[in-house]
Length: 143
Image (cartoon, rainbow, N blue to C red; front, top):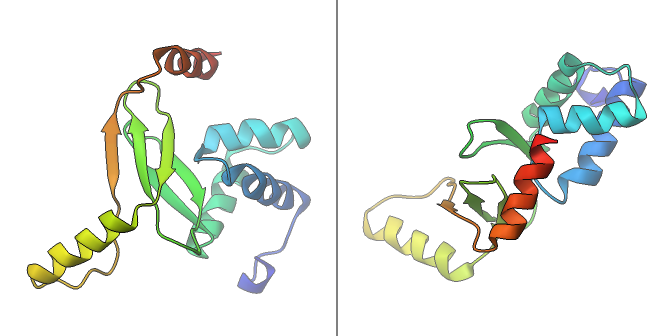
């Protein structure tokens, strides 16, 4: 961020460190990230987390995603293979997956229709089959 003319502060460093540490495992909302950051740096406010994530998305280090609940979530930019998402409409659990067959088929369909794909997002919505795990996630989210 210093290269972008933004000075690094301890608060911003903590936010970035935690995002990189936890962003690998999932998709964090601003509130979830704030809660994690405040465990380390209690004085950090929501606006600081928001501005830091804006810098990361502008730098294409993070991606904003809006899934079923309408809440913005952030994930690390995928510098490797493109991935897609399965989202539970009940508990909000998000699973990432990669499937070369799906990717190839999408390219074939686009080509058949005379379209050159520049980018895409593939999201599949459903309900967790393991209702016990789904209920535990719902309970922990409301705690």
